[in-house]
Length: 293
Image (cartoon, one colour):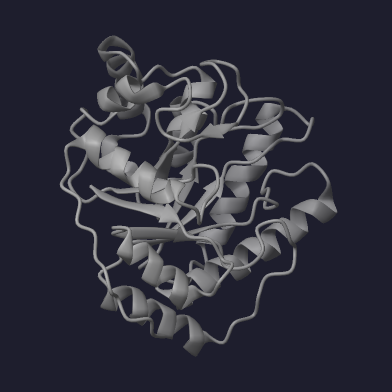
């Protein structure tokens, strides 16, 4: 497995890459722009290419781009839906220019129109977007949700249905968020619970479709359907739960990204250390990396 953080934006890209390498990151996730704004940045393609070269220089891979939180391809309001599609397309193109392997997208919310209609719109929208997919080098990863309110994608069954509807050849996979899965009701903290969860995942999604993990503890109880992240070992999943989770035979180079609170602080290194502890993977920390790019 390859461990990393969601890299903060404040301080500059090169400086943050330097810090990430120094604390032992092997992979990174980023936003390309403000995650709560409809206005995507318009960086020059050559600037994004230079950033991608910097990551390769420091053996940071794969790079994962996360879409803005606003994007909802199942939105009930037409204006919101159209703005979501536009922002999705621009983010996808920026991710391609950056050399990202994966673009993470929340399944979205039906906004009160009903689950069936919301899911139909989401699937039909992705079908249309994938007709003009910009590159075979980037894959869309659907992130499971906590399943609260009108949100969709809270179960592996629902995500599996999306994948089946889009076909085996669709550039589509799963980004498994541990805190969201826990809040949705999945139990990773016991051997029996993990087996049941993974049996469902394997049957409806397939382990080969799991291309990334968001490793986050949950500040809310299992089945709460509330999305509240916590530092590893500080929430309801706990140290023993994560040890159980990482005992599963995950693919060797699967990227594992921390989205824990206070990104950009001392907690990044603390949580990274815990990932290595849970998984038994050796940790390599580099010092004295020259800042460039």
